[in-house]
Image (tube, rainbow, N blue to C red):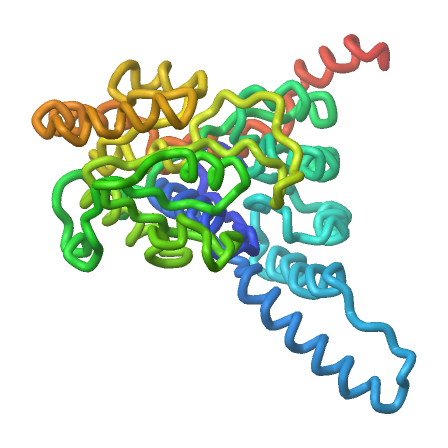
Length: 377
């Protein structure tokens, strides 16, 4: 894969249907923008088909063999993913880029490598699912993590690891009124995300009287009589609709997740520094928003994104900013410039450069230097 040559990549879908899908869509857009030939492997659709087919086959066979074991989730993932090997070989790709890998059976990666293919992973769930990600990282030729403080842990198991920040999609995240905005409600405050334990506690601690709050995403964990049920407007929504909700709202909220998994007893992460996708998307849409604190919030946005430490501080900020339309709109207009060079077009440039560097055959001098360094000479 030399510089200036056309590059062909097999891009493996993460398998999930919502937030990580947006990462795949963004990276695909960026790679294609730079002339990369992208062959898609739709793991999400294949998992669904695999599950239905294996269950139907099992039910049919069980009539003749009652002791036949039910297919496992590992069976679903393996059958859904193993076709990536055939597709990569059929299309003779230069590299395989897997997004997330959380729903791709590890044996598929092993087979891809055994076939001589160059395999990389963009890990999207650091540091929340980092334990599982670190089990996958040693199997591949190189990887990226979305959390900069996680890089040392990845490099300990795979020296060819790096940091690839999240990004925004140029066709979805635009400032100013867009045609799709008329299809959504304009709230005082909007949040799009999942109901992790800490978020339920946070929203429950605020007095929302007099404020039109819109909650979107996966909130089925709430009890039928929970006080927040009144604010849940819709389940998971598309990235396009999310952007419209951000543009229509007076205030967007960015609450960084801390839970490693679901439930009231889920452990919390020890540390994180990087921006999540929501931070980039809100800013690219020119949407004023408030955020919990992380190191990169201040580094990227300065004082253009007010931050808070607890619900009491957040409620004070929400009410103050709702009452100051002019100041809020001035701040919102400054946000797109903060992330102007952080779209998936720019991130794809880094991915392409890394792939070219990692797959280029080493020079004679580099081989000699490596031999001296390892004592092989």
